[in-house]
Amino acid sequence: MSEKGSLIVISGFSGAGKGTVVKGLVSKYGYSLSVSATTRAPRPGEENGREYYFKTVDEFRNLIDYNGFIEWAQYVENYYGTPRKFVEDEMKQGRDVILEIEVQGAMNIKKQYPDATLIFISTKDIPTLKERLLGRGSETEEVIDKRIRRALEEADSMDEYEYIVVNDDLSTCIDTVHSVILSGKCKKEHKTEFMKGIKSELTEYASK
Amino acid sequence: MSEKGSLIVISGFSGAGKGTVVKGLVSKYGYSLSVSATTRAPRPGEENGREYYFKTVDEFRNLIDYNGFIEWAQYVENYYGTPRKFVEDEMKQGRDVILEIEVQGAMNIKKQYPDATLIFISTKDIPTLKERLLGRGSETEEVIDKRIRRALEEADSMDEYEYIVVNDDLSTCIDTVHSVILSGKCKKEHKTEFMKGIKSELTEYASK
Image (cartoon, rainbow over all chains, first blue to last red; front, side, top):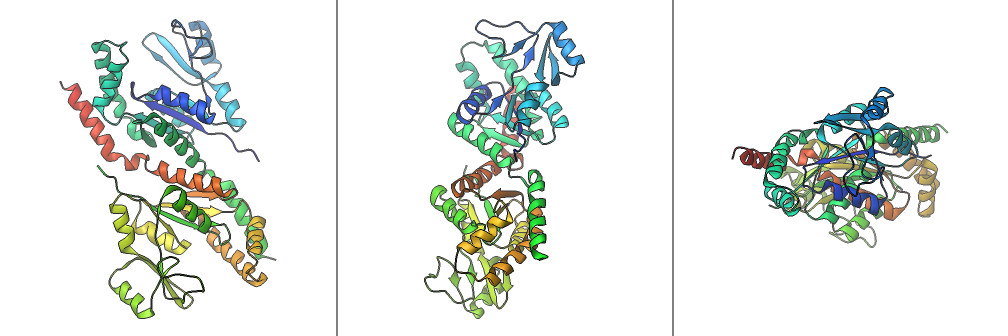
């Protein structure tokens, strides 16, 4: 009896370190990671199929028409989408799939997959968030400012997530997210078949 | 900022091994274990304050009158109860407290402590349950029969538990219950203060 895998959606403030947390979950616990498709141009060092699947606008639109994405969105002039086939194949084979996506995409996933586990990653406070963005060294004050203002919008959606995990110590955060995913499998809502089986075995026994 | 500890209620079929799981949680992860009070006589090897607090009927009734229990019940001719002071003191000090109690007591706890995490431990199936009861060697066929019939009643209450954890491999079961407890702390319902703080910091930042 192979159980279906879970769908795990991870979002969080830019700078909260969700990318690193996701990488840790994949390397330490062997989760499957869904790679998004995009029409934006690859940046130096990015590889097709690793960071993104790079598509032309025509290819992307064609995939939308063929229901090839479980969610997609347009940010500024670029399309981003989560390929349906990989996610559904992995889950069918009992593997847990992680999607690292924006708040808006997460809400779309929740509608289609009510069983998905939605996890929001945050720093312990906003000064820490700002520090981390500054620490990257690659962003201008203006970009950081924009990101923190965007975080304000994202914070309004935190309530829609089932779990809020604070990324203070990276390794603790990775283990905590893993615990959240494990515990999801024990929820009684996911154990209805099991409970039915136990009850019918007991009823059979009692009727002897 | 010291967070309040959680209250964890563990129930399960007789023979599912919940006592061993609880012992493992205490020794491996340092949880506090609530010791029940009872009016039944100590069995050979039992120690006051370890297996139970042994009380006379008068003492027990007096404790009921003084609101000394968070739940109590009478089984056959004996009283059993969960002392209030220990549980509330431990939680106030930020420690997670485990109660190993019967289904009926668990339902009482849920009413008084809606934030309590209710976990039900089961074997993977009923033949395994029967095997384990037989394996103890100390029970007659009649007692085993009675226990399995009682399991049928308990199974009706499984739906009232938030989590169902299968005890197939003991060590896995202990780790899984620990994960369930950890994940409970990340539920958004327990993060309202945190989210309020983050939002107010962001609002302050954006208004600069």
